[in-house]
Image 1 (cartoon, rainbow, N blue to C red):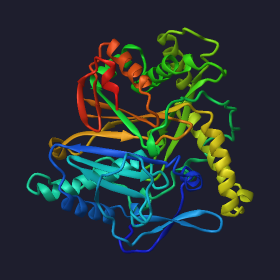
Image 2: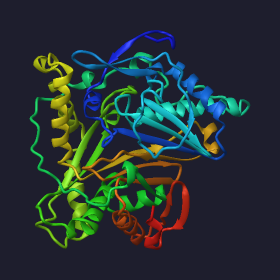
Image 3: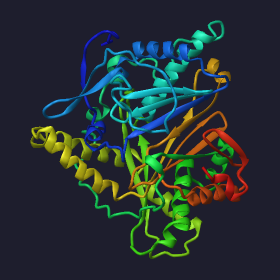
Image 4: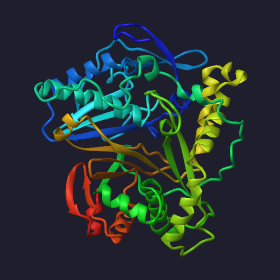
Length: 440
């Protein structure tokens, strides 16, 4: 069923989104950023018009969060979304008043276009589709004679109902009931907090082809290889100097479920897989052993059967009649406790959005994409990464001053022969050859 831009409607939150309204705070914003660097300076008026056009095509993004008696829900937002100049650090809280009630913020600065999205609205895949829709309308206005295409190729045959569907509910019966595995508290990275909870960002830009060749040489994927590099970097630059407690280094790896289950949804549809290693009993372990462990561990978890079991577990709790009848204030308190316990079982997160493509006509006007992931008091450093053409951008977000983990991470890549260009706030510093370049 197609929905008109001016039509009133409301939606339940999807399974993954239900927890975020209850646990979001200034300490943990649950806001991520998808950015695009254009070849030319951004024209704000064209960007504003493109945003409005994209919302007409994808009205699900034009919603606001409402609070009921038992659950939060999404309601059509008839306010006007406003494009603004970027003046805050990535992943900052989305103020409902400054954002006119919308659950996203679209900003620009020089050649950059930034989409900051609250995870209640959508995941990285949905955010990418939305911002690419905005770019399509932006360039159609700017270069009408050159841009002839009207649709994005990924899911062009999907309807508005499919875009807004909850794929968790669609697939939750595809597995047997499973119990939640025990996950002990994980090692936490310590450091000097940044002023006013700002986020430090350090980007490493490498050749996608070269990185893929390196991963294939080790008979693995880019995601698994870099997960092992992150784990080893935390061990070498943080854990081995703070081994008072026997806690594993646990890395969270979000997985796009659309790659394993039939779905065209633009709402959240992902699962979080984690891998952890006990370094307390394995001191002076070489990187090759860490990589071998991560490869074997994630091989058993990133597959359709295991992911279906995770969907089953998560949705089964949502379907519990007793839980559904609990008023929101009590749910909020319970979900905060559950969330804090879950967060303590993780050290860091690595999110790989994979290879990003756009219609061929748009390619000459886009330089690169990048992803930022929010941090909190428990996970002080995270990685968001994606590739466009032959540029893989690996973006560290950090809530602390120390940058030795980032240095070790990129040093490992250069030791394997990869060329790494480091930048902060898109001021490129050249090849990664000295520790001073990782200063934010």
